[in-house]
Length: 108
Image 1 (cartoon, rainbow, N blue to C red):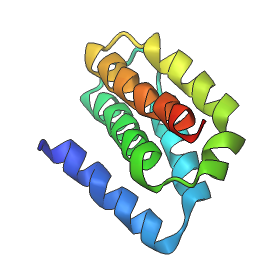
Image 2: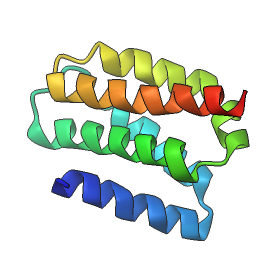
Image 3: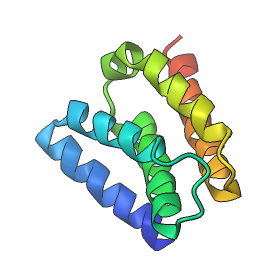
Image 4: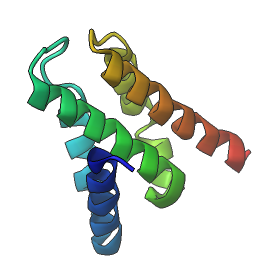
């Protein structure tokens, strides 16, 4: 497991323990939408981290009502992230979006 994914896992577990879902959702959106098409390595890693965290939250931690209430903003975030010029960001976004959509399918 790469280091960035491990960091995402730890952050998700901390927020789950404290039940601070609104904070983590806000942080995810801020990280994911920072400086579109940036070549800055820190920005790219931040975007990847946001998508890894979202993937983990959608799969294991984020309550269903939180997913549903933020569905529109998440989809807007995915849409923008899929337009990013960095392949790593787009790949992480596709994985996170797949987890997000499968959560709704599992509930139906």
